[in-house]
Image (cartoon, rainbow, N blue to C red):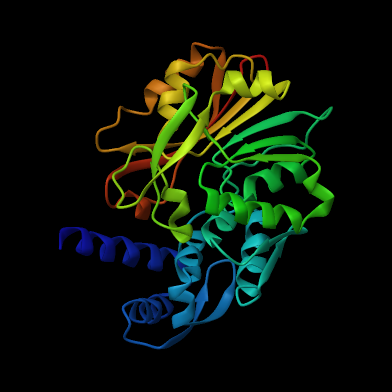
Length: 311
């Protein structure tokens, strides 16, 4: 009951931040509570938007509220409009990159919130992408000119990523997508996985009903096996960022962007920042993500972008 009340409170607060006026907020709230079948209201950045129950079921409503309740760049606003305008299409195209209309939160995070925003690549710089999910970040980095080695451990998610990459023939040759987890040691690990739509929550550090065994490699092995000259390390791996950062020398990278997940039994993410500072990095940005994510076993989620002191 407490979590349910907290959830309602958080959604109410976000709805009032996302809408242009109190009447719109009230109408959206009634719609979200199931007291209205449809809703046409004024949102920040977008003006009037018409919504129906399908938008709640497919989670477009959630991401509309999250987006309009925070500060977005001009690029993010344009991508939000494209994201919503195509929500009934089989294929979504944003910034010239095409995706199957599935697992939409990944598209939202990468192209609307711009969680992994980077400059264009110079001299064919390379990204190691840990937590490749549906291929959204790999395609984003490739569109910026980077060579990408992406790792996704869940076979079902990996197969969807390959489909998305194949929709973008102009970028596919810049991406090597590998069906493995990355940790601090080689071998196998067990990951909790609750289905494709919840793939972003697949983790070796939670106790889901379904667990699958996957192969695991290390950053050192990746660099050696693929002869990678590392530039950027991106991590979104639902807890493995602790294991990797605490047990690895990452000083060969120039930039590191990681999403941290502070579960109830996890240490403060400050230890990860301090470890990387000791390896010659400084914080470029640190953003805590929308508090609606804090329900359940995760008490804090954030994105940290660190760069070498010389940059």
